[in-house]
Length: 243
Ligand SMILES: [Zn+2]
Image (tube, rainbow, N blue to C red; front, side, top):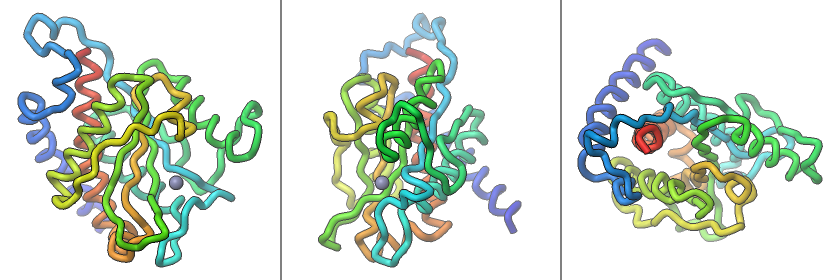
């Protein structure tokens, strides 16, 4: 059963790769970053980035609690692992900030919360060419809000492009009614504010919304979401290797 699912997912990934190639020559918002994809420019490749996948929270920090009673930390980790599998199947190097239900710690971090966040930042800082993707779930007191939203900061110009690519792909492939735009987080998100590399935080959906929470708790939706995210990240990684 497990093997069959993996095979099916790999087939999906192959289809995605074909779509990715077509997109690479057409729709990408990353085209707007001043990158010249002419034959001359292609002589100057950088190594592909390593993708740092950061499932938010963990251990004593459960994050938000869904309307159905599930801790955000479990959903973040489930999506991250599926996303990592897709990326690795496509040949990307992936590093997780956590692969278990644990909190991280760093002696320079101050409180337990900042020690945990700083440890995540340092994992990315320790890599030469990182692309940092933090995964979270959103909540609001009002149940009606739904839909994935990506946050970025202006410390690296590519962050906005990566965030916009994810937001566009989600609209095209998973949430046709999602009109959200990638949002500048300013200094409000600790991990993004302390990284100079391309970095985004994906709020995968609203677990305060009953329908979306139920979806996010299913393996099939987690796989769909992870697949679309992998497609966007592969596109961004390709751009980073060319720039
Ligand atoms: Zn969170």
